[in-house]
Image 1: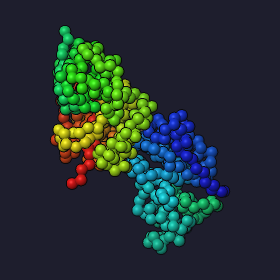
Image 2: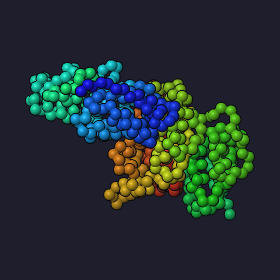
Image 3: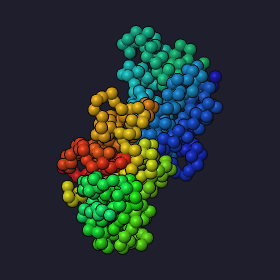
Image 4: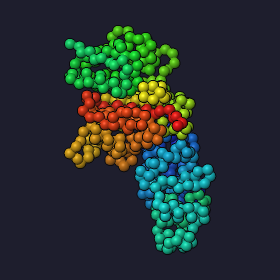
Length: 189
Length: 293
């Protein structure tokens, strides 16, 4: 299965979903309309794929809209069948938006992978073990629990457990026996 | 008989209580005249609260505006008379339609639908960015939080009030307290109020004590919303976080109580109960100029 990258321009979705010309993600009804359209687009392309949600052209954002667009979308993905794939990486979340998005994620106990200055970052609610494991996979691009156990300082089973949790949260991709960072353009086996 | 209700010479969130105290003994269908002849200054809160007050009356109140031309002209340019003429029976001299530049960051603007929230933020966006960085000397990242605060405050009307309300934003020199520039956001509605909103969603806490003050605290400090959705209630939390971060003040009045988060530059009371009743919710936010110490 090829993991072709798709990009959804959130600002374009916003303009199309609510038929207005502004680039501000404000109010819950707007957020709901945007999320529904993103969900439809994801459903069409998600089989095994990584989709980039590009916020670069978004101006203002409020909590209500971020809750609808970001948090509820992640909840939906987390609850979906993991074998279907459907991974999302966030782009263009600037410093101005970051604090707000992080607060919304923490409120729900969620996390996401965001490309910041060309490098993927994990933001939101993650345990220290999850953050360490995610970082190790990111640096390697792909890793199996056995490869990380020594550096991690815990047994392979524990590392596998942490990586599985990350995979269920769609913060890494699980392939046969190993885990792949979302920034990787590798093919899912 | 028409009862005359005197408006204080300086009308803000504190002195507006004097207006409500005069109204408290009167039935809702009493004929009243709101006498603002001797009022020389009004904050955005004072002006939006006056319009809100008119919405609460069963009989259209009479209104007599400021005698002083300068004050009347200011109120006109703040859009007060545009809406007052719909809500009051006007007496005396009424300034003509607004002429000249706006005096406000955001003139009095009605809010009843989500689209209104977008309009409010779009209209203020450019001016607010300039005021926040040039007048308040805050970092540019404060602009995003300001838009968020305004949006969430207005959404409270759309989502919870059950009827339309008003928003106004002004930048002025707050000489009385600190001699510094402030931006004030006032969002007032005459809707169901916070207590009834929480009750309607079955969100009243399991406690013997339950009144307007506790309801305001639950919403403002506890992030409680009438909706069961876990994502709700983040708006007030976000507003509180923004205001606290930039050393600002927030005060929420609903029913007979008022709860405030009071910064060190102000000596307001944190919680006041048994105030004269006022339907709906009235929100005051003040962001002060940053001064290097």
